Image (cartoon, rainbow, N blue to C red; front, side, top):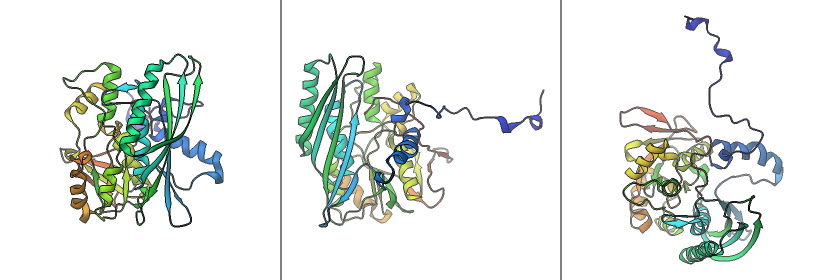
Length: 355
């Protein structure tokens, strides 16, 4: 038997998923570490001085007269295109509306661009377009320009949609991923992991005794209610790709603070827990489409929570953690047994084609 002292550890390699790949893999679109590496090591160097200095869900554009616009774009490749509680159509509207809302903006205008696979049923496309129209009306935004392209049947998979949006940021509002501070309370507007499980249950034919429906919804009204409290909102983020885990890690790194969560306070429905246990998934890494995270001064947390809970989309809002000066750039969760575990940034894509 070989003794530990005789082993050469220097030649050992940790068996993590291979990330040095010469071609694109699904994980590059997952909103986790691989997505970040693609942006940092390929896109930003290639763009050079033309690239934006800050990378958030939306860009804040000063107009010279004191007016500030928010501008955002997103693409949607959901499979299946129709799922409990929604479709790729309303998701494409709500997703971009929410990206604008996370900078405090009131969304005004959206563009719509479609990439259609040859052979797609016109009846399906009609249902998607009607869902987009209804979602835009519900959100109070106009669909003002667009484009359509068709690819051959071997090059696509149904309908892909891109939406870009413009919104107006109110005076005095400064919501930015770099503004999280030690002592801030971390809030979430409701149950997490619901959208990802809704899509996966439909895709995989899973049954839980009840239908799990997507939480897709426009959040700008909820954000407006928070702004109306007069509280200085530091950071807002809708935890879509990569879930709560990815969003918190990105904020922690941008602000160089630590985040400490309390596991027992995380609002994870039992159906989501069961599905994630069955599929081997972490609920904190599952996508949401109608929830937001908020970093606010601790002394104002109760006031913001009251405003959230008074809104239909925030009735289950709660505090899940605190910003700390310790372990900057890291997210840690206190377990039910009193220990701590690191909540890491997902490497790739747990659930491909979710949003």
